[in-house]
Length: 137
Image: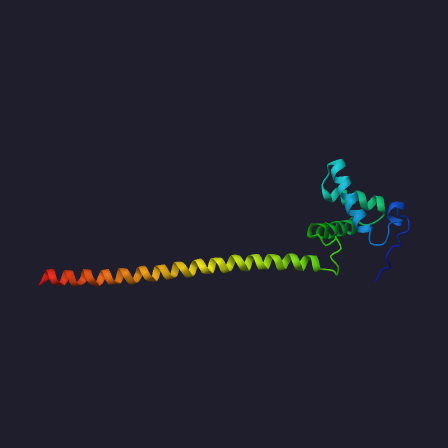
């Protein structure tokens, strides 16, 4: 397997970042480049990669990872990895389950009403048959 290139010539802003902040800094740098230069994300990844002596793919992966964390709110001290997401998923599952239960209850009511209507129509049909027979005789 080929050796990875050693990256030692990074700008001071990245080298002196506190542990765990490089990802957030990368995300912010990409957002800033996109907003200031009005360029697509792909071009912004390339520019930030060039400025930080990293690969565009690394920048893209970091950008999307941090973006997902920000969207899910997991970056606000939710604790162990994935907790923010699982609570969001749990909330979504509960909402879907509640909606499904309500829909099933509506369907049960409709089926019961239809069964009652079918029974009434059968009774009327039998009565109409008796009347027809009586008129024929």
